[in-house]
Image (cartoon, rainbow, N blue to C red; front, side, top):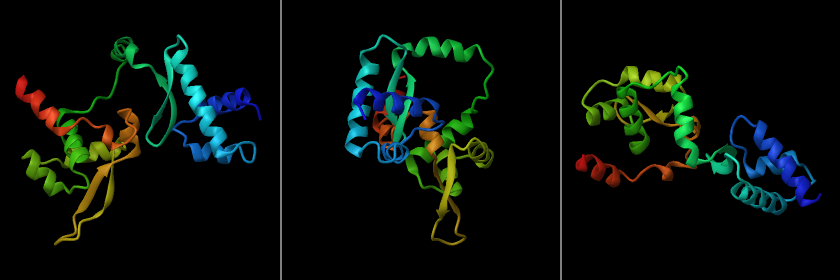
Length: 179
């Protein structure tokens, strides 16, 4: 299979995929048509094509897979568009709870209470309903409380490749201190 045809097929698959698609899954879909090396080369060329084109889209590796997304430099226009539509925003309590879980996971509700100083049960229910957090098992202690952590949807919503993409906690503390 020629590189241009392989790039077109991969681009088509990524475009219709609801979630980021892994290189391995692309190889499985292409069956014996292409090797892993061929798919990786095609992805690199496709990523470069998007970078060089004067379009509003780019090919990005996020949440362990590949996705076509908008370029960051158009953020302000996209934000305006998003603000023009009704949305279901997270409450401040839910955002605080999500931040605690993201940085301290896996974590229990009592541990979240200790950090935040207020009951977070309704915020946790909201985050579970929106699939931003998931149960990660039970803590081996008295009462065996449920442990919570962020989900793949969390990575998708915030455009993160993995949790290493979160801002450094020290940088956030410096930012808060300077305001």
